[in-house]
Image (cartoon, rainbow, N blue to C red; front, side):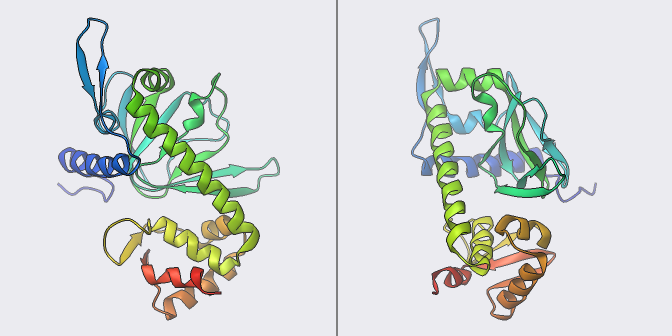
Length: 254
């Protein structure tokens, strides 16, 4: 049987997802905890297992490329934990102008605003850039789990703080760096620079229009810089984009 690129065997998916989640949780300093049950017995709660497996109030979903997890204006009634794939968040103004505000990768939560106070409406649209697998957690279940399991709430809180710091860094980048440096930074972030691994990482296919929206410039300028990076041997692209860590020199060079 021939599978589409986004389809993986359940065993392979579970193995890769859990390994990735364990690395992320370890980097955030959270581990499993013992939770006292109402019958007086204690059970071991592992956030990596919780975020990998389906259960009461949560299920595994597969989203094909270019399909939406949710749309701007939808009711915010669940949270997604991205196990694999890439996602972009976009907003549309009243005049119909669209802007990309964030790119998310495996280990990120999507739609986390749904757990804040009274459920409201989605403020952005989340669209799969590549085939994605995620754990969909109903709002009530997520709120319950955060209240009862310190290990999970620690992971979630540290993720929110990291997102907040990333947003501030994006603002500083937008205000003070050139469009060339902003493009280099976005490519390095998408390639998860700093993660253990090889000297180059493949980024799923992404349009120059989307990159232009992310850094606040025109598509023609993105095309110019991408060609420059390729001639300098910093990236390679033919469908997907291979990013070499040497691209960091563009950001460090004044």
